[in-house]
Image 1 (cartoon, one colour):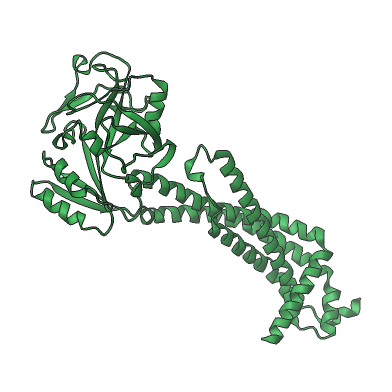
Image 2 (image 1 turned 90 degrees about the vertical axis):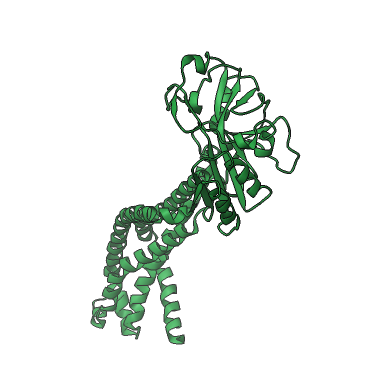
Length: 431
């Protein structure tokens, strides 16, 4: 072990001396290899960032991994009271109840019927109206009212801080405060699409909700990014229930209800039993977005890594050519070393050490360039792309760069190393 360590140290020292003596040639080798290693680092970092972005959007839409979502199959006037009573005050379960809401002038048709996005991508079809048994039809012009200054949103009433299950990104203001007493004027948190509509259109602060005893006066307290392309607003259930009875919270026309649960919570069984008693079936789904996306992400990563590998092979060929040329120039030197007793393994180690050091230096430069480029990307686009905020350089990309540098150094140096080890002693007589 001591003998091997001494040879390794000798090869390393002589290799550094060889690099210093041939700076220009070493620089040419690093230039040819730099693009290959940089391609590997960028592909690995890009795959990690893409995975984070894709998972971040899925988390907004469906929830964090490990969350259970409960849906309902059936309808009953008792659904609202059962769900709200069961999850009230709990931290391991949350209910979301969705309905229509129109904010603005009373008795007029909103500028975005059916809570359509304000870019017009959903068209401007006539609003639908449904009865209690689910029969739907388009509203007539008389039923929908004249055109006016009003905005329609999807109103989602929540029983608690839903951000535990869905990490909505704050944009401005604050989230709903569940530590205070419920107010008669409900606080609303808008998503980005709804905020865009209220920025463009000036409407009165009067909200109409189906089943409410009177029109409400909402207070806008914040804006979040929830990943929804439709205008949506969030309100506390206990504030909305001042005006809408719990039996009417689920709108038969456009109602939606969902329960978010911790993976291990007794609420699931209790709630399923209560709902089954009123002939409403439940179904649950465990969110595991990362596992669901693994195959797709792995395939994309392998495709891009294969392309980066081709670029890396070009760099390896450059090191190989430079290494062979260097060995050809140092034939007398290596023969003289053999004549004074230098083992063949040490001669091979000297050449291989030079290529390995070159590969590692190139990997360090490529990783440094990638880190700097990512910081610049975050600085320039962090405000417009929330998933970039706080983004750190992925360590697995750095490891991939180091491995690429090592592989390039070995592949580019193994043939010149074997050639150096095979130089006969008699060659020294030519000197």
